[in-house]
Image (cartoon, rainbow, N blue to C red):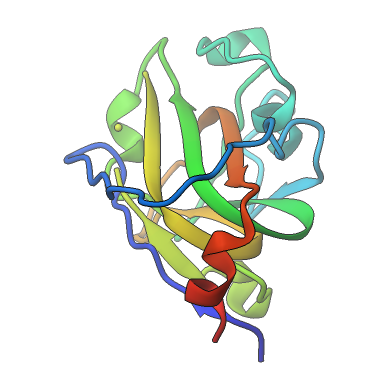
Amino acid sequence: MGDLVILLLTLFPGLCIAHLTGKFTLIKNLAVGAPAVQSSTYNSLGAAKNAVDGNSDSNYMRGSCTHTAGDNPWWRVDLRKPHKVTRVIITNRGDCCAERIAGAQIRIGNSLAYNGNRNQSIPSGGTKTFDFSPVKGRYVNIYLPGANKYLTLCEVQVRAATNDHFDNRLAG
């Protein structure tokens, strides 16, 4: 088994910010154009890839947001290799239904077991930025536990630290 990191950040009701120490530089958005999948797709407008297209338009009908259907929906981006993730920026749906994201969790890790939904989780929030101590992982999941839930994401950006200073803290 790989490293399991759970940054349980419940999205939007409250905001959890971790204080980062040490010197590091955030690199460009790792998620833009990366492979993305989701548990289901509500209709043809709501494809998983829409959240990593570089377009943060929050009007679902313009085709730049994801939309799932069913129980326990999730969305995942594959960063192609492990990174020391320190920031996730999420743009929520703006034309309606913004409250649907309440209770969603950000999870980061290297495991695809249970569709990656048991990897480490992170905090909750238009566009919200979640900063936290570095979490090493290849997959970033957004998971919304519960029956009859819809997960709609209009953009997800993932940033990572470049300084190896954090490696010792992340080793398992």
